[in-house]
Amino acid sequence: MGTGHLQIDLSALAENWRALDAMTACETAAVVKADGYGLGAARVAVALAQAGARTFFVAVAEEGAQLRATLGDGPEIAVFSGHMPGDTAILREARLTPMLNSPEQVARHLGALPGHPFGIQLDSGMNRLGVEPADWAGLRDRVLPAGPTLLMSHLACADEPDHPMNAAQLAAFRAMTDGLDVPKSLAATGGILLGPDYQFDLTRPGIGLYGGLPFAAAQPVVRLDLPVIQTRDLASGETVGYGNSWTAPAPTRIATVSGGYADGLIRSLSNTATLWMDDTPCPLRGRVSMDLLTVEVPAGAAPDHLTLIGPHQGVDALADAAGTIGYEILTSLGPRYRRSYP
Ligand SMILES: *Cc1c(COP(=O)(O)O)cnc(C)c1O
Image 1: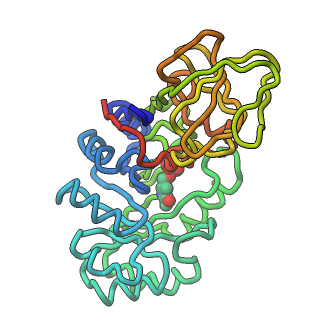
Image 2 (image 1 turned 30 degrees about the vertical axis):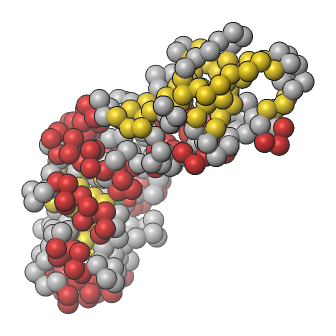
């Protein structure tokens, strides 16, 4: 077996959904954009639907159409990018609910698909997606009679509970939605943890389902084992890998494992990551190559694999070593691994 083995624990995923659901009194949806944060949207969404999720969010209509084919007619599937040019047929045929982001999208949707469900995404200060407050003031009397299914917005700093942006966005969202008799949603994973003021009628967790921060109490979902291709003994002063970026200070045993930056093991892990031989930490030596890592193992050791994501090092610890966030590690994992869903 030349490729790494990615294990995705669907019971832990379902457990995380239930744990986040138990923190609120409202509906808990599930965000499965970017192929379920890289873990396989079809497998992930079926497991979450079995756990009880009835509403799913994706980034773009094409992801929604694939998800509809997987999940069948029951669940609601909502699209964050709204109703883009060219989306009309796919939204209609896959019965997707676009979250409309601008007056142009509202006009496009009400013109092309009258009577078809939609929600409105409002900008409460992140300045990324959503209808601006001034535009909403001019639109709402036309939009509300058409029956939006959801009014939503997104928090920019929810992973920092003390950040003043949280309260500022909550106030902006309330100013745009208070008194309107439409279901409301503000919280993703971080927002759920901010407490009941942020939870409204529906929450939209993503990363917490997949075992990532800011949901520190999450069950780990991912394990990644990389096969060792060969081992060799270096004399003091020999170098390892491209650019000779690591020199053995003493006799050293190096294992070469299958997996590299083409598999999402990004180059910023070079000379900093740790892999594990069961309970023994094994430092990555030299640069990450496209398909290979070179790792120091104890003298005489000949492991058949090393663990990169597992009990000793979760997704966020690996992300820290790479100078990034768990979201980027997960969504970069790529298609080459053998995947199993125990
Ligand atoms: C990605 C996303 C989410 C999920 O966020 P997490 O931090 O992964 O829980 C929710 N809402 C919107 C608008 C998003 O873009």
